Image (tube, rainbow, N blue to C red):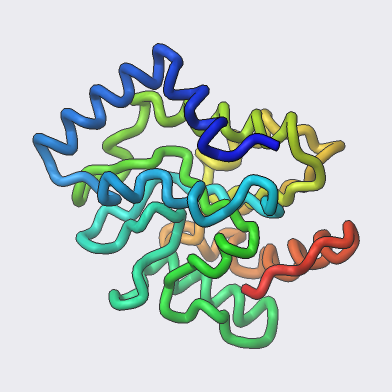
Length: 216
């Protein structure tokens, strides 16, 4: 059984990744970039490949100081929850009839239960949403999703927002499960994120295929 490290090391040998690495290193030197360099691949260290059940796909990391921690949508427990995180917690409460176990915004416990918290782009410059798009991260995350698609079965993919939904073309719907909606950002949450019930739906799917449900 391969590990994430094996899978990522294969990507690192490719030309696109070598170019991406040079560009990203330059940006870390010349501007403020989030998350911290050592946390870029944190999602892969907390969610073991052989325990993967769910992929939650976002856009790019939070671009405010101290927010991004290498897990999509998650923030360190000691800071105020950003609006997207507040909306996720609101939807959990409405969907499950109780508060989330992650009221502090730190979703590490989800990751450890088998939820890969992945963004389509893994770095961003301070105060500049989308600033690291089209540098090569999209190719990297496409390849990760293709690998999961080809080598796993019955993964629940939760796609929030247009960049994430575009990735559905990489997923075999006969082999996996896709739940999608607009992004939980305040700009769009009222257009279909609220009421999507993705948390209870995910657990229904996991129960059906005899996998342990997630403690959201």
